[in-house]
Image (cartoon, rainbow, N blue to C red; front, side, top):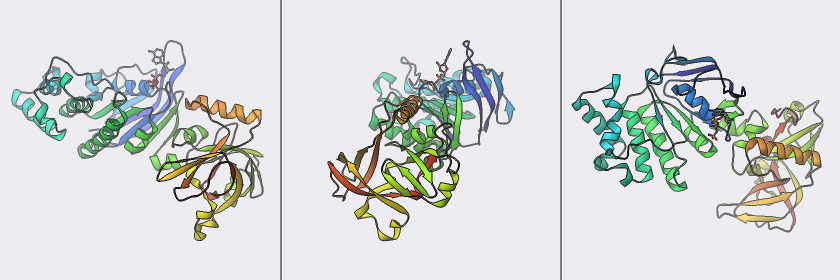
Length: 386
Ligand code: ATP
């Protein structure tokens, strides 16, 4: 097993546009790193550069401390798990898993093949299916066969290219947790590409968020969620998404479309000299003011606003509060939605309320906001000032 180091990696295709632009990531031995971002952000290209399916335009790639820029894919000894599993339909599960052990340098003896395949199959609960053909397996089982093939090779690392995107939602959740447990058990360095932020957040020790070939932030899932470095990361991570509202700072008062809010002095100070900011606040930072416990009430501000409707989900509810937006704010939100590959960012606040809240739509309601959890972004650079 090995560490993988990407140093200032650049990939330019024929059109000259850098699909991967100066990306540096150090992946520790045994670490599980996710590459995530919207379509076209360069995550697959980056993975293909690591595995050797794509030339490196500039920068350096090392695996286990050895420079690998020009090494052939097989010399890198990495195992790739693809979206379509790349199984051979005419071969049994046993033969599919054994396949890499019958090739070239990795060629193993008959008894070794049997023992390695049996061991992998038992790890993956495929023992009973070793004689079947891929066509007679479920999607999840096929996925496990593909993983088995990676395991028997005793590769330096596993590289996953959107392995779950062909599966339905339920199976995806199940396979996600299987992949995670397996990775933990084997301790194999893993790099996993996805456009799904839930996969990224649940699987990764660390997550690399990419936009147009540029690394935006590399951090643990919690840090990405709580301390996004910029508007893009803030909007990409979290569901429902973070709310973005235009605001101005005056002293420790934040003037917002929902009235004035008192904010912590250090947040106000961070935005000093920026008269206009975008306030970013996650839906769960709000609550029905009546339900807020006295000991936390002082950490936030209350305000009154018109709620259009609520959605009751059983364990919680979402509330919707539109706000007036100038043409400038609308164009800012539209630009952000384009970056995020999102349908639309409406000028509205989405808040999560306790299931016990009696707040209903069509009237003015009293809400509480935990002002310790707001972010202030520079609208021109997107940088998180707080
Ligand atoms: P997706 O999730 O849609 O697969 P991605 O984030 O994996 O997207 P890449 O496939 O790495 O993105 O592509 C990054 C950029 O490089 C895109 O703008 C894409 O159009 C471009 N690109 C990818 N492959 C080639 C190629 N062979 N020739 C030219 N441009 C390419």
